[in-house]
Amino acid sequence: MRIFVSSPITGHEDLRAAVMSAIRGLGHEVICAEDFPAMASSPQVACLDGVRASDAVVLILAERYGARQASGKSATHEEFLVARDTRPVFAFVRNSRTGTREPEQDAFVREVQAWVDGLFTQPFQTPDDLREVVTRAIHQWELSRARVAVDPAELLERATGLLPRQSRHYHHHGVSVAVGISGGPRQSVLRPARLEDPALADRLQQLALFGPSKFFTTRRGTEHGLKGSALEIGQERGASFSVDELGGVRVIVPLESDARGAPQALVEEDVSAAIRTGLQFGATILEEVDPTRALRQIVPVVTIQGASYHPWMRRAEVERSNGGMSMRMGSEAMPVTHLTPPERSRAALVQELDVLVEDLTTLLRRAYRTER
Image (cartoon, rainbow, N blue to C red):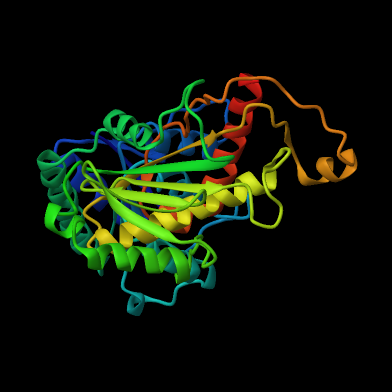
């Protein structure tokens, strides 16, 4: 396994040496700036490439923040941002009583510690302490990974399977955005008895109607029932969601409203808002059915249902058209859109929601226009 060592270099030589010794002692390969040959690209570009080439990152957080790069963040901060969504980050924080942290570093430490999902944060005092906690953390992670591995391809297949079947002959009730979220490593988080428990259906229905990420309306009735191994809850010709034994979540968000009726165009801002709603409510369901976060990784997927002739437009374009927009011919069957790589840390549903929404909206627009 290739492990990248991230920290300022100057003033951290003894700490970096301790980490490298721990990594090599476990039989892994160290990737560090000290070993990079002279190259045409900038040192920070080389370091970020090193992060991307690694399987995991060890982040050393002491008192110094480091020089700011063009982004306004330190090189170490940039490396953390590149690593955190796609690989394990082991963060080790030197006890602040050894010295006062720079204000920027103090804020950085808080940001790292807030990123709890899939992240190991441990304190240390001396280089010897650091060598010991790094060795223990990486070894424990290896053992857990050997027991239960996450398969991104399986997660993507499962997330895609959560979405409603689409074909030319399948008729949807209006135009809507469908969001699917699968979680891994693969395991049951809902026992069959709990899935059938009316209290669970009542609780999830209450969250859909009145919770912080509510998207049901009180003006329509709500029904629920089991379909295979999934609990489905929906409103007549309206929003719906489901959750299965593996924690797979599907959320359907209509783009039509009681006041406006069916849309004449796919308004990008409305699609983006629907994706946000789907991801937020999906995160809410996962917290309800898997509060201990056994599901560490997620794969989100999205698609459009029931749009065969609607042009994709921004709201300003719709307003300028004054009703004179051109309809398009095409199939209702839309491909499923996903990120590359498809998996993300589960914490991304909260911590990186804006990024997920923006990227999925962009990819969905691109796929929709290509298919028309």
